[in-house]
Image (cartoon, rainbow, N blue to C red; front, side, top):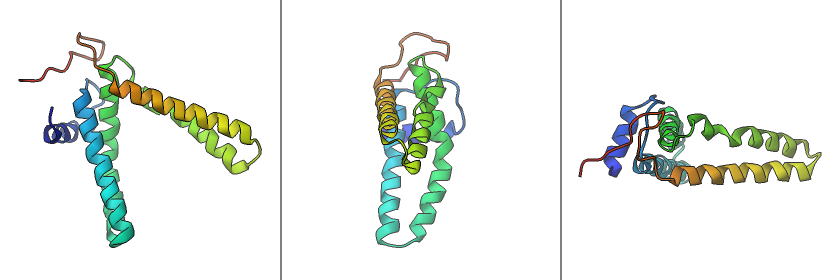
Length: 144
């Protein structure tokens, strides 16, 4: 799947959390969203604050499709789409401990667990999808 087709597919499947997504579909959409985030952030800081509002609008427009594409990507390797939220509880506890400044060691531990879980997710996103049917559907086939 090429860049343009990937972006179109992810917006076409705006809130479709079922099915499967290939690595190229996921990573091209990831590149598209984070590339535009970077451009809008730099523009908001250096050019005009209107780009800040554009950034907020773009975030709202891409948040659900990004979650859906990520869930479909995890489905392609036969994992639940809920895996994408694994680091969130640890990150939340880390932030609470960091703000309370009571137990720095525990905060560091939760921070390391969070980083480890994000690394694990990146490995999952890079893993080749199953070539056979799984509980989430048929494998992705591309026309050559």
